[in-house]
Image (cartoon, rainbow, N blue to C red; front, side):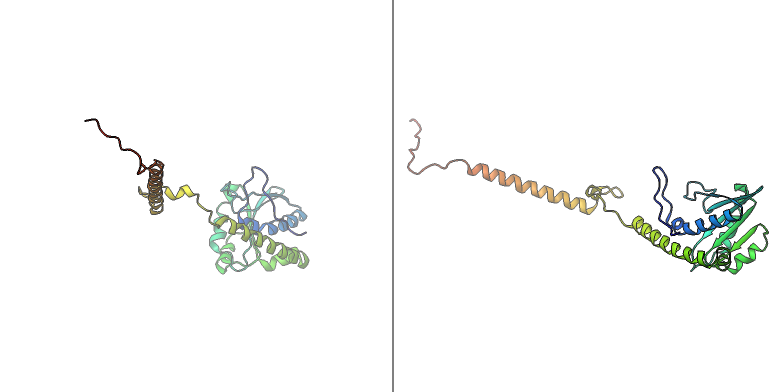
Length: 221
């Protein structure tokens, strides 16, 4: 089924672009593990909870609680630092195991580190193809591409500079008014002077001039 970009519900925080990009992988893995008998719960990794941030699914089977983290970046392998950072948070979540799934690869050091922890499982792109099958994986790649486009569109919208209001030009900066504000003030003052001069000259021109043949009033002797 083709992935449709989700719209946040009223009062819900929008998902970050990186979370939108891996959303189809999260859905595909949720379906897979449900088929394996796990109870699957989505973890809202929207930054509202640091405990769950970075994890995507909670899997429960009998008394085992497993957290699953999805990563989708075919160009950059998942590093040892990422793996161990997620693993260190297992006790805080009350989980017994960690599964990290990527559509790409893991670094050599990440695989070597995982070998020391029997409750840490790494699933790369090749193993993912075996788990999901060719047809489901092809659909997943199409969904991931669509999600990537939505993610980049959201990121471009978030980073687009917003126009500053005109009054922001006159906000003090380090205790001084910006030059643009001083220039506007000078222009306004000059306009006021010109307007007053025009009004004065217009008022003076309205007074009728004395005619040449008007009798001149003589002062009494």
